[in-house]
Image (tube, rainbow, N blue to C red; front, side, top):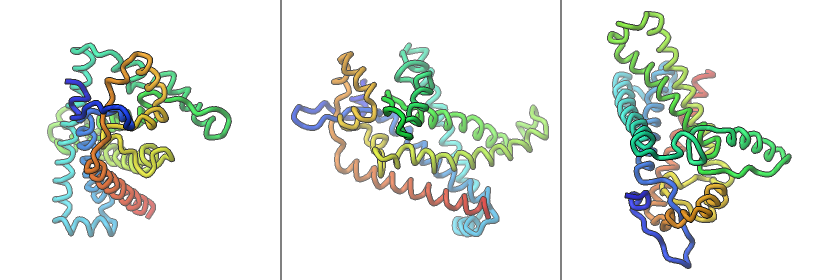
Amino acid sequence: MTELEQAGTHPQSGGQEKYYLRFSREQRYMHAVLFTTFLGLAATGLPIRFSESFWARKFASSVGGFGAILFFHKLCAVVLTIAFLFHVKDVFKRAFMNREKGIFWGPTSMVANWKDAKDLFGHFRWFLGLGPKPKFDRYAYWEKFDYWAVFWGMVVIGFSGYAMWFAPFFAHFLPGWALNAVLVIHSEEGLLAILFIFSIHFVNTHLRPDSFPMDMVIFTGVESEEEFKHKRPLEYERNSKRGELEKKVSTAPPDWLVKLSRVVGFTAIFIGLTLLVLTLTAYFD
């Protein structure tokens, strides 16, 4: 089954504005699980981290205490861990069983390469008016940074969290000081992840001038030809030269999906920014 079929779309006829498939239904579902569970982890982890704050105590009393908060924190952690393991399995299956090219290297890979470094410095030059804007491929350097920040966070924050959760088991092969260290690591790395996602990621993804007030593609899976040419010129040119562009042609997203995506997206942004403000307030209090 192709990505186009997975998305439940069909090529549209001429005359209308063209739309191209960027993310399959499976990828969008994965992102939905990711941001939902991350919001859940943030909303439950921050009150535990800043348990002496007024808002943390109020939140705890409204949901049944810190024990209830910890229960939902662990529940979100398990769901996110399952999603992460599923993603890793999918990557290895595509790379080593399906022999899919470009997973670990090339213009469609999430692995950083020399072009990303040049794009980063080229972007700074463009910001300062010292050069042209870099042309980006399927994934820009900041998107790869976002991806690996989450990947790294899953390993570090996930391991430290499970080490605290199942401390008697980990105590069989970890020294006492290590179990004390994972508490600090989990707390500080989790705080760093929250600050990063709710500031840098939100700005890069939704609040940039060419995406404001929200980049809808991760919700709808498609983007218009104008957006495709503007945001991913190298990918557009490569697919056009190879004759693969038409394989990605899709239909415009239905109105109900656009409206639902906006509600979900703005709700997530509102929750994230609220948690960011509460975090900064508690941290510097």
